[in-house]
Every structure is written in structure tokens, then in C-alpha cells.
Length: 479
Image (cartoon, rainbow, N blue to C red):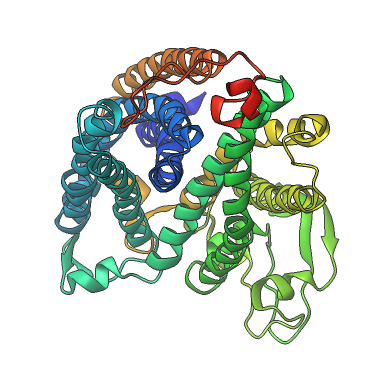
């Protein structure tokens, strides 16, 4: 229990708790915002009430996630001034301005138009409302853009140098366009979008499986499937590019990801570790399952490495990641989920091509619907695992190669940090179950077909679970 008296460890645990919990909510809002833009655009183009009701229904889940994301994001940023004051003082000229951009440009843009998107359906012109929805989605993704710039700079600091313990910016745009920036932004953008697609698809599959408005939710299911056809393979490719960057810029992180203790020389084939049990004390893997010659194919798309893969023993213990097992398995969990999503997408597309997703047959695909329900939470695990690899693998540095984590933490009494950590854990646990409760209520209640449609003289007619919408009924039934 020595960690209870270590301020740095406790501050890291507190930031990890708040960051992991906060990340659950903007992941969905950034991706679902794009989905709302699509369905509302389809409604404006076709005037099909199905798309209108989709926009109204999914926006409820959007605002729930937005509210919890705001409530949990603010305390996380305050920690830069409380638990990580030396870090803020050292890099505040650049890092602080980037966080300021995120708040003033992105968050304010999203929050400013959110009210119009939620309450302006019958109060503003449909085109103006659609513009508000676009601005909300743009603001949510712009927030991700600035946050990833800040974090990617911590991974590959550029645009200045450390002078007497403070980072002095010489080229602001070079700092923004640091080597990790482009792939980091794209990787996170597709991660949030892919997670949102499989959440929407999983919820839609739940409705279809339970025979609740199956034709209605078949539309949302097919929309996310059509987008996933492009997103799932692109995310795998961008993840590969990110791995290549780690290979060249953060060799100690790569060694932890692959649990490599000894250096693999260039010019020779290298095996890839599929499963292993890393042992930090003995500096070796207690057991390991490998795939021959696969590491070169993963890193360079060829079996023979052109550059060496440095082992962890190349660095002193205090200069390399310590939680090798966590980084190793977090990476494999992230990659495994990415390939599972791609495989599920391909199989579902095949069923679509065979006509199995028609309104008459989609409810009969029970195992496929169950697979999508199972996939709904997996995107969150992949995102959280990716951030664990990204940040824990960066240790012992807060700013890679520039500022050590031990030097970035505030000198606070351990008891005070433990108290705040405990309070965060209690409050966030309550928030988590409260959010699940209200989210489940929204899903159980389902879409409200009594809502009037803007521009229509008569309100829509409510439907019972499993019954098609009015525009989908045969002409005889409508008469």
C-alpha cells in the first residue's frame, strides 16, 4: 500500500479515473452528431417522417451524453492547475492556449447551437435548424481536434525548446503540426465515429430483436452499416499508420506494446508476440505465443526489418514504461475489437446483399442482431484501451523526452490527493449509474411518434410496437 503515500501515483490515478470516465461521453457525442446531420439531411431531402423521428429520438441520447461530458470534463481540466501545476507552468504558453481554443472555439460553438437543435424544431426554419445541427456536430469534432493536438504534442513535442525548465515556443504552427498530429486526429475521429455507429446499430438491433418498430429501426441499422463499410477498414489502416509512427518516434513505447526485452536487429525476420505474460521483475516474458515473421509485416509490410526494434533493456528501468503488461494487453484488446468490428460489418453486408435485411426478414436474423448488441459497448473498450497505450506507454514522461512525470506533479500532501480521488470515485460512480438509468429509460420508451412534423398540417399518428409507420402502410389501410 505504499502508493497511498505517494503523491505522484495518487495524482496519476486521479487523472486516469477522471479521464477514463470523461472519455465515455464525448466519444458518443462526436460520432452521433455526424449521424444526426445525416438523418436530418435525409428528412429535408425526402420529407420521409421516418428520418425526422430518428433525428428526434437519437438527439435525446446525444444531449444526455453531452451533459455528463461537460460535468466530467471541467474537473479534469482543473487538475492541470491543482495536481499538475509544475507541468502547466512549464508548457502553459502552448498547451494552455490549445485548451483555450478547445473551450472558446469548439465547446462554445457546440453549446451555443445545441439549444436550437433540441428546442427549435417548430420555432425556426428547417434549414436554420439543420445549420444548427451541423454546427453542433462540427463543434463536437472540433473539440476532439484541439484535444488531440495538445496530446499529440505531448507525444512528439515540436516547435520550440526547453529553456530553464520552461518550453519556449519558436514556431507555433510547427508545434501544432507535430509529427503525431495528423494520424492522432484521424485515428480518434474514426474511433469516435465507429463507436457511435456500433452503439446506434446495437440499439437498433435490440429494437429489431424485440419486434419493436422493426421497420423503423431497420433504417437506422442500414444507415450505420452503410457508413461502417468505409469506416471500419479505414480505422484499421490509420491504426497501422499510428503504429508506424510509434516505431520511429517512441521506440520505448513500441517495446512495451510488443513486450520486447531484447533488441531485434535489422536485416532479420522478427516474430510477433500474440500472447505473453510480461514480468517486470525478471525483465522477460514468463511465457509467450508468437507468430513467426509477423512483426516485420505489421511494422513495415515485409518480413525482414530494415530497422532494429529496440528492446526494453536498452533503457534504464527509470527511463522506460513500467506497466508493460497493461500496455501490452490494452493494445491487443484495441486491435482485436477493431478487427471484430470489420468482420461483423463484412458479414452483415453479406447478409444485406443476400436480401436478409429486408423488412420482412431482418427480425429473423437473431444471432446477427445479438452480435450487434454485443458490439455496442466494445467501441468504448477499444477507445479506452487506446488511450491507455498512448499515455501509459509514454511514461515516465509527461512530455516525451522533455518533462518527467515525477517533475510535473504538484507537491501536495498525499492525504489530500487521496481524499479528492475518493470523492471523484464516489461521485463518478453515482453519475455512471444515473446516466445508465436515464439512458435506459430513453431506450425503453422509444421514439415518440406523436410529435408534430414541421411543415405538416396534421401531427403524425402514433404506432404500436412492431406496427409500420403511416407512410409505410398499404394504401387500403391508410384509407
